[in-house]
Length: 360
Picture 1 (cartoon, helix red, strand yellow):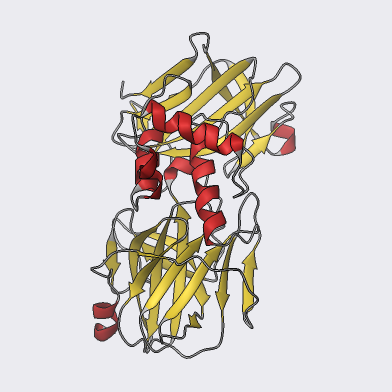
Picture 2 (spheres, rainbow, N blue to C red):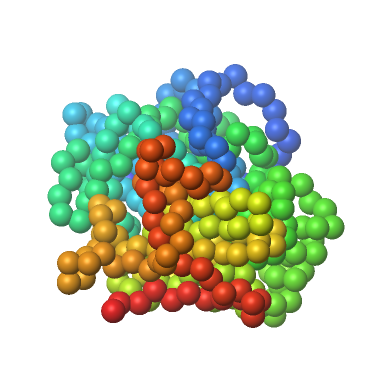
């Protein structure tokens, strides 16, 4: 296990760019965990482990991954490895002799409720920030349990090992990168839908408007740090659309609702880290927008100040549930097993609104 811990580290060279190549059929099995709007799949084969292990991201999300290593009845975990769409990252270096390799992946908070299902068979310990945990089956202070899935990576021609993170759409590298850009443009308030990884005038117009608004040159799109640039822009207040900003020291979970004149749709939960902002994906031109947010601890329990929950809402009662949700019928919340919560109406007459969540 000591040797495994030494190898369980980030490669000093950082992420490697995936070379674009046509999609082709592999003689491999697929473990598919379906949960719309996106699912994670791992392409794998029965090839023995010999060399460096890479994770390659073919999703339209920037993800953070954690690796678990089972070796001689001991289990270690390490994370988080950030991986942009259409890139790879070495997560284990050297000859891998582990009995099992396990994986947990999460989308960044900027995407709201995680589109990646957390339903693996193994429960191992992780931490919120970068971590190495030697005994990962007994969580201690500052550690939380997470679901890990066993993977058996594919052995490549150069002797390395690779596992792919993929969506139902089965993007190739080029499509995953473009879909990732489209998704962040939509979150930033630009009309780049549908998110399909297909280039066209609508996507190019939205991208040009984004670059112009941030005074960025067109060639920045091809730079290795472009996704970081986009995410940074999304997490700043915007002059258009709705922006939430978390000015508390706590994690905030938020929900948004839109009234199109025919029905009210509530959607959540969006995770907003301390000191960060987030644009919820409000599409179309709704007649009215509503917002609710609540500060929570590491166990997702409501923070209480002077015995009162620290939240930001209003008088408009709408339906929610504890997990990710999108609800269009707002009647009889309780009898349908849902939770009615008071949302606040948001005045969008000025074209853009920033709601700041602060301590009382």
